[in-house]
Length: 369
Ligand SMILES: NC(=O)c1ccc[n+]([C@@H]2O[C@H](COP(=O)([O-])OP(=O)(O)OC[C@H]3O[C@@H](n4cnc5c(N)ncnc54)[C@H](O)[C@@H]3O)[C@@H](O)[C@H]2O)c1
Image (cartoon, rainbow, N blue to C red; front, side, top):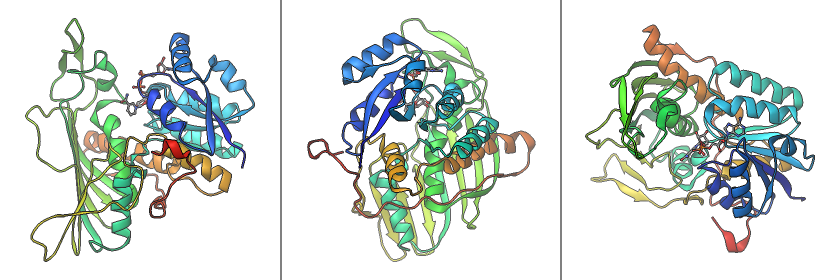
């Protein structure tokens, strides 16, 4: 099979791990990059030995069939649209888009053009969450009854010198971290039916202590959001995402309660384990050996899966219906709080198929992830 050629737009912070990981796969090749800021393009192109393009050039290069979009969230829709218009498949960082309307437009265009859209996060394809999915599918904890998820943090202004976007619409803990949690929940337990929620801005002003000159920013989006999730399957869940926790937290990231036992699921913002299970008659939680590969920072495996899926003419796992359902749910938390009523999701998706056990993409031997 001929290697597919891939280009990358958005040469910022997260791009280095994509450049590194993409060199491990045999079924595609990352050949070039572009950014609004050509200095960044050149720096990453030199560092990773790929071609430096302008945005127009990379979109016009007919040899490139797939673009990875690593721009900031508010540019995701526009860049994905340009890529699809240029007749290329696109894999974008999370969230799919900022608004639901943008997401719908993208999906419609991709359908018309028979092109793929993939979207991060792909952490749910890592060894940790894939093992959890496998164990649920194998009925290890019995039929799931409930789930709890907690993303408790103190926000980003103590380490990020320009954290303003985290406190604007399309930011906050829900749009920043919600994609990891909700994608993991949906890939384990299936699609969501309705959401109830309360959301607040606890600190209308926050002081940025990272960087040389402390300054204050104004918060425009809820930073503490707690909600109830009803899944289509009947599983009930609760989830809190917060940037307002300054005393730390001992809550688990995700726990799933089944008829036969409880499963402790690893941090969905990582690829690794551990996965622990405690069954009815156990006196403690026991760690379960991971059944799947990709436990290091394997950002790019969602892209690798999408490209293999194009080549094998099958569905890809980190796909647009999953990403749109998660986007719909994230807005649902804020809508439900604002309206004081359940938000009934307008979208659904298939539970993405789990990888076969120990699955590995075609990989260069010396560069195993
Ligand atoms: N940094 C992280 O740890 C991290 C982790 C996971 C996911 N992400 C996601 O990755 C994406 C990028 O994050 P980042 O931290 O690398 O951001 P960044 O600000 O460091 O880099 C974004 C880059 O995109 C470029 N850009 C912006 N708009 C553009 C446009 N219209 N056309 C072309 N280039 C454009 C910018 O010039 C910049 O170089 C975001 O969607 C974020 O949610 C980041």
